[in-house]
Image: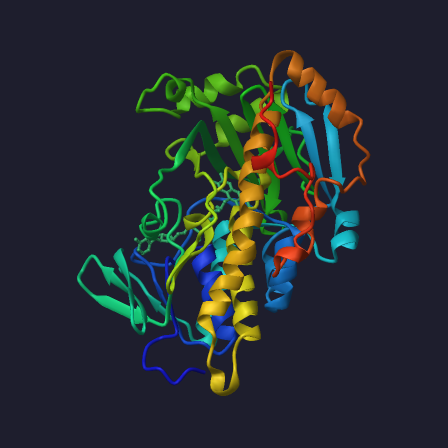
Length: 417
Ligand SMILES: Cc1cc2nc3c(=O)[nH]c(=O)nc-3n(C[C@H](O)[C@H](O)[C@H](O)COP(=O)(O)OP(=O)(O)OC[C@H]3O[C@@H](n4cnc5c(N)ncnc54)[C@H](O)[C@@H]3O)c2cc1C
């Protein structure tokens, strides 16, 4: 434990990423304070998929068994065509667990967030609400955050886990969120209300279609069916402001198969999520201020890795802190932040760019859809070429990062003609 009167770390943002980092760092004996702008800690949304690269970390934290009790461990992930419902390919999640050593889990977002919140409380993280950060500054002793109400919080290190619209990100890059013109509707339905539909709660199912896709899986021990409906908004493409409205949802799925159309009336229709990401950046650290989670690498959600990357960031940083803590508990923060920045941005760059590519593949129509379907149908169900680099152990050093497929880094690949 540091003898400084300041907290060792101030984390801005109490989402899954911020709380995950706060918990990880407190486990290393650091004093951590989380500043959250909302009046309460909480999560909006429905389900979240948690792949083995994250359940491995939950296991390390001693939180996996509780997460499994709160969620569902499905047996398969199945991809179907959204127009004719035919099966295109599948992942055997039982075999996947054998391969990677940890399960693929689906869980309610608020349950995962609540799991971290309780864990933070148990280890004594200081949790502050109504704390909207407006500016950041490096200081001789570390870094400082100023809030909208004028309060100032200083620490040896400040982690900005303030999401897609991060204030801190402007310290590192002058960029804006990139609109995909796609929008997501979410909804949970009591399983009792799904009778007559081909719903198998042991499966995560994604129906891929022209400019749209639909996902469903069970939650809360199988009491609820989680649904996500995603489509390209014609109004967004036309440059209109009020895009993604329910009339567009209905039109986007009108031509899909019965199983998908049966799910659409059960989507929440009063709230929708426009899908943005940001171009990857290689620099996440300036002095003693570092980005983490969506603030650093907001992805389109097609790889289901956004929250996982945020959790990995916190775990990885804490591992470097453990490695670089000397006698008397003094952390070599410059080395820890440099090690964090040496590996996490490259991994997250791959995920963000691959998610964009997956979106294009999923949303094909016409003849390209037929060709994609033929390729997917030919895939061997136990071929892990496309998952090893992502579901394997989280790399702490650049040399541990497994090669991805295709091996050519996307940024260096020749543009398609
Ligand atoms: C439809 C959809 C499905 C998804 N599915 C998955 C999935 O299956 N698996 C997965 O891993 N990921 C998924 N994601 C992505 C995932 O939700 C995000 O990547 C993840 O929530 C990012 O966590 P975060 O803590 O970095 O940011 P956020 O969740 O955005 O949290 C940021 C926090 O910071 C607070 N904050 C913001 N600004 C300030 C400020 N100035 N001062 C103080 N506090 C501030 C906010 O109130 C919030 O609490 C999905 C996303 C969407 C939209």
